Length: 412
Image: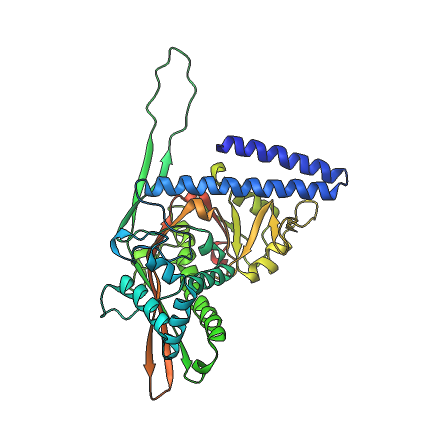
């Protein structure tokens, strides 16, 4: 199935659903919309596979986000098979308990000690590296929580390639033309820019008292997950939307955030302003949507923080005074504008509204998955748990994004 076939099928199915709604056949309409949802999921899988193939070409496909990559991290030059002893140990309940007990300073039994040594020796290669590999289920739980707070970071395309990764960034493209039989075909002009994804260190620490370490393991693991998800999520979410790139003011490299990239473009072609201190008007929303290139319509979402969602987007009316912000009948608790899903993202600033196809328009490379190190403070009777990873990201094309932003008072 190609894009044209997908769009034709979706258009037909949506027309059928609308007809059923007009006839008052709610159950049949809901069933038809469920078919649309399944078609969208099928196309998303096809599009993601195509994007990964184009980005990586001859590089083996990465594991799903939230799973630790088994290249290099688990064995140097080769790839660890999914059924290898190391990967199976990493996913085991024994390793999860061994990991938790190690963080809590408790002794391990023979089986737990064996699993712990197997995974971490394969991962660290050296006893000088004291980081501890986070278990698969714990890692997955952390990133699922991060996705709830920062859906933009969760939605972007991710690959797992160690070292420097050079990517192609779309710049301009000449238009295709029709010709008669006698006319010579002109050479098309395709221009691209390169950007390099190197490695930006992501490190966040949480501190707990020794008294808290006395809690049961089944309570300790969710506690660490929630704490680390908030800390890592805040940094990762910021990086994907507002990171300053290699020239960050802090002097430490950051991923290039989508908002930062759009605001840095000459004449800001993908930025739309609305009047300061007001709610965006219907025309502002339409203007912003019109700047998204048609090829990125499927997968488009709107990202804003909760203040902007409920104090601005929820108040937008069309010319007939009807709200644009309507419930999504296929996803309970979700809302849409012009059919586009609206997602609350805490990394966005007040007044910022980002229209974006995150999966097709942004690339995040994970050089090193999250591991954890500990440090005890005897006098304070506390322990620091430090999560550490390496990643970098940048937009693939600005045409997949538009920033709707409140105008400054000076510009009015």
